[in-house]
Length: 463
RNA sequence: GGUCCCAUCGUCUAACGGUUAGGACAGAUGGUUUUCAAUCAUCUAAUCGGGGUUCGAUUCCCCGUGGGACCGCCA
Image 1 (cartoon, rainbow, N blue to C red):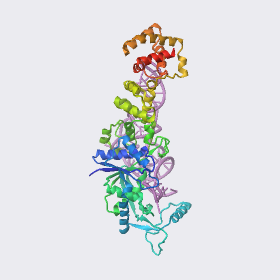
Image 2 (image 1 turned 45 degrees about the vertical axis):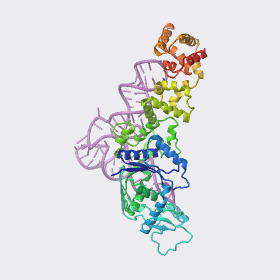
Image 3 (image 1 turned 90 degrees about the vertical axis):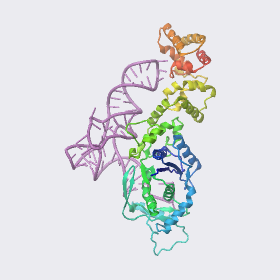
Image 4 (image 1 turned 180 degrees about the vertical axis):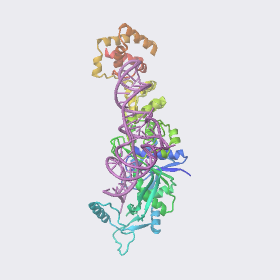
């Protein structure tokens, strides 16, 4: 059996990482089974759908490495087909025209609310007898839902879920203006796209009972369904678009790597034994719906950071530099091309104390900026004795023909013995002079990452 | 409120009905180091409560409790 999965977001707001994870799971399942994965933009809400959101969705997916087959499907382009099916359901007796005005519906809802009973459309026009069809009202088309009995869906994640049919109302499939609603569109499109597995958020579970009835009325094959638990914010509530750290860009701008976030999202709600790190290939190979948990999970920034740190440290350094370069370009100040070589040379130790690209960028500041700014606290550490040592260092340093670690080591050791002191009292003033802070990379690394002239200039400046 | 779903360390999660309930992140302590980090070692920490079923329940059933989702002519 062919595996065809899809991700079907509506471009009415920025896609958050819960959506990205849903897309990832769909994609993984499709790829694992050598099937297809499609992206369908559900833009039938003309008022709220925006091009920018569509672009953001596409960008987010591509950033995290989820590639859809073919071009994206645009739901609104299939509107004729949706309307056609609505007509067919109407003529076959599976749907009917409802002439209730919006006011009338609202009135019923209010009434129910007052009485504290759940509202369900009263099926007034399902079987109209002796009712005059109002001339001034354009009808909507409603689907004739089952009234009695129970329905069960076999969910690949949740197991069997049953409900009483009486709680599913006769839902609208065609609006007053003739436009199709989600329930119809999604079903028709999934069918025409031959979707075999629908993996979506838990919030869609109830819709399955509606959509299944359309499939059955049309005598179409019903796809498999899997409803995955939602992702909650760190506070424990539903992830909303207003939450910080909810869109891909929120992570990109602090310097999270695509693989790290992909790995994080994969392990959020899914596990394979004790394994924590998954390459792209491994995740395709190992992913399955059985490993998906049933309970919602909370976002955990420290874990994202820790995964990101892992990927930063294990990544090819040239590629890491490219990421850094792009990151600086997009979110900070672009790296001056004259500095590129020293950054590349130094990335090996700059990345060592970094959890994010931003950390590496910050750690590189002493290379990027020619002006060293020393904090008042660190200036205090540069007493006369400390300065004296830096002067002596400088004298010898100037004489060096070639600068390398061995020679520097000799020089520093000689200063330590001469002053009967320790490494710290030699290294610290030098570090402050060179990078403006007593915290930073190893002193040899610093010196070697700067040009000889630059070292001389910076040390001279404090004296 | 109605319907449905869920429940293992703080967090993400493992555990054919039989384990000293495991791992990872976070936290704590110590070693190493050239500062900050990193690193290494060690430690703290969980089966929501109550009933069953069973020789035996984290696992199966019921009831509570807690959390969540849905209840649009949005998707």
